Amino acid sequence: MPHDFTISSGTLANGRTVYHGQLSSSQQGRFVIGYRTSYLGHFGLYNTSTQQGLVYQPAEYEAPYGFWAWFLYPTAMAESKGSFFCLNTYDRAKFTFTFMQYAAHVPNGDFVIFLRRLLQLPAATDYFPRLVLQNNRVCYRSDNGVISPLESDTSTEALMNYFNPTLNDIERQELICSARMVHWAQQDAAHRQLQVDTAVAHMKEKLPEYHRRFNLHGAPARVCLMVADIRHQGRAKNDRIAAALNTNGNYNRAYQNLTQIGEVNYADRIRTLKNTIASLLAQGRFGMKYDAHANDFVPA
Image 1 (tube, rainbow, N blue to C red):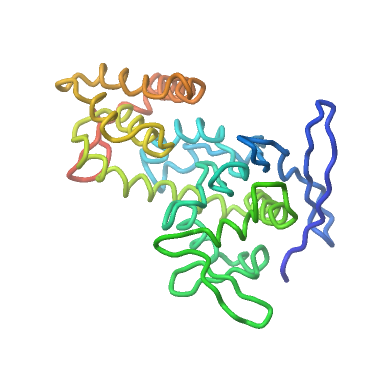
Image 2: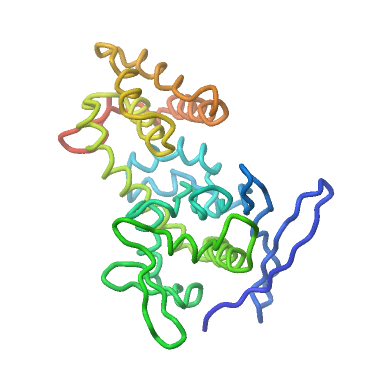
């Protein structure tokens, strides 16, 4: 039976508008969908709160993923503080979700890949009964059964519009889709597991690409992580990264150079990355180097 949600809103003491959802015909209480915000003239929701038991903990995923579970952690903390229901609907991506903030605007990108897999979970018909997979594309099924693709190799415009019709205001469709995603992530461990699985697969796929461009064989994990994070966020182009790595094998200097990229505009993010990496190194969790032949990390 498809889930239905009651949406309500209120004003907090600081003047901020908060939107709540509640699963209809259920004894479950209300949950926060997100808070109204504006950005560059756009309006949307954000939810960067955390909740015990719903935060990414690498130790819980080390058994299936090994060191990769720890490798994700600094970026996860920078993106969402590890929150499995982190939400953003106010920028050009129109809809961004998960602890790694997968963004809907990239064709065949991490959000699209994640959503394709999400729609194969048993609960998918409860949360998104209109969305179906056809030829491994996310599609919309109308009342009369007509199936229309929402994404392709070149565009996700229809998919973005399904999750968030416009950036001019916060529409009901945007609230409903956000409520579905937040509730699903909070209630279903399979949703959270898929977030992690997608993130690990993404990193494993990208590291060989980064190695071919930057020659990362033998590079410490902290250097590889900074490269991966810069590319994940998109705060610099490849030439700038290559220049930072051009240190004749001095990885300490390379790491310092990488941490300076974007420091004016992204100081908080870079501080979080550096602090998290330093903590992991102190715990003996990050002293690894990249083996390009195995596409894996080995003891340094």
